[in-house]
Image 1 (cartoon, rainbow, N blue to C red):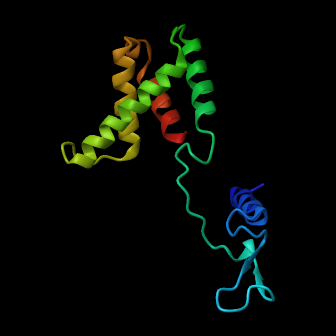
Image 2 (cartoon, rainbow, N blue to C red):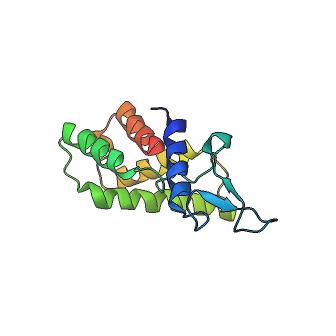
Image 3 (cartoon, rainbow, N blue to C red):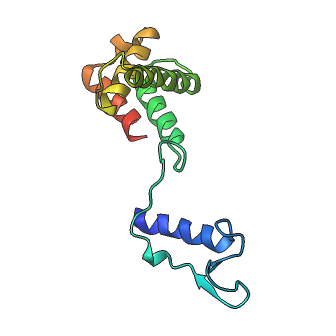
Length: 145
């Protein structure tokens, strides 16, 4: 199933639930008597669906947890990953806040993630146990999820 089709399915389900209008799949016309005329929702008419998908709509946590666990276990690194992820999020948020405050120049998101990842690896004294390609793969994991 394509990503677009899956999203349209979600929109159709939400519309059918009445969550958008309070009246099921039909929304009353604003300019006529509500009792005798309604427009039906047609998800096929949607041309764009905008959403904040940064870990709010999709599960970005589980792939991080699994990927980091695999990377660390393969190197014999013993770190509890849940708090590690929370610390990384705090680290990248600190970088974003500095950019927004104008105290740090803008950089692409991937560099924000890499910067936070590198700082956290070094803070836990495990950065030196990972090669540059492994560090890059970890940063890429953050960027994808």
